[in-house]
Structures are given as structure tokens and as C-alpha cells.
View 1: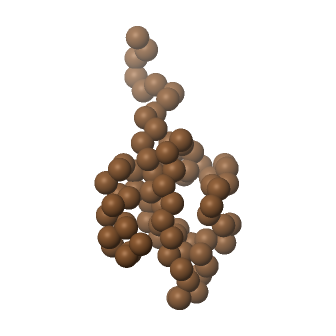
View 2 (view 1 turned 45 degrees about the vertical axis):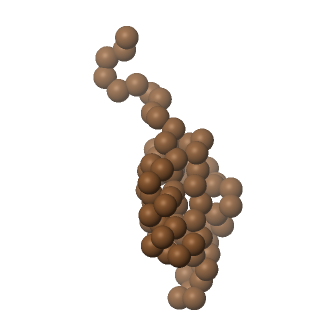
Length: 76
């Protein structure tokens, strides 16, 4: 059994709320990613399918509960 933190973290769902552009009336969308971990997202070394490059990320949450919270908060 290895000591310390292992190199593999749990693959918890990551919910991302983003606006499609920087305009005030931009559409707000919710994307949930289930096959990556939060370190991959923070490093930004890959492009998330479904989120455009010019999108403005509003909130990020790790866990199943955040999908429901963001859906209710933003009326999605």
C-alpha cells in the first residue's frame, strides 16, 4: 500500500456554469463532466467539449449536489 496521496483521484462529477460570451445578455449554460478530475480542469491542458473558447466560466463545483444547486440557482 503506497504512503501519501496516490496519483489517481476520484472521478467525481464536475459541474461548470458558463456564459456563452462576455455580453450581459449571454445565455447561461450548465455542463457536467464525469470522466475527468478537478486537477485536469484547473490545469486547462485540454479543451472541454461543449464549452467554447470564448466562454466566461461563472462557477465550478465538484460533486452531484452542485448540478442540482446550479440548475435551481440559474433557472436551467
